[in-house]
Length: 196
Image (tube, rainbow, N blue to C red; front, top):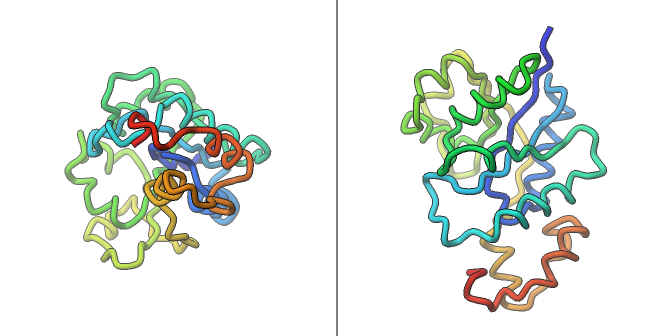
């Protein structure tokens, strides 16, 4: 029997407590053996200009989960053509880890856009998706799809945008990110135009 691993995709710009609570929840309260944070260098639906340097985003995510055996960071999208498409990432992961069944983890807001993703029909036919409700986001019709499971999860209203704004304003980000990530972030000059 193959082991099931949840994939939480994101730019992790930067990784924060909300991501980690969600990953831990799915790793410990579902049939998943582990959750991997898939760091996306460039999401095709987002502007690359607002992203912190990709190597740092990857490093901070690795720092954040280093002491948790159920969580790990996956950097496979750094090896793939850009922008990153989920179906291509899944193909690459299945080729690299043939004994693993991958499950996508996403909020209801993201599920509503899956039909616009590259090779959406194949993705939905081949991949289980665990969806968590998002406050204010209606559950889309795809939630009734056979391979989609809706599961409750604790959510924190924290965003990378808010954290970056705090850093630019010189405000505390304590408890918004893990201490090791906070220590790394506070050394960066967020007034630098390249960090906006």
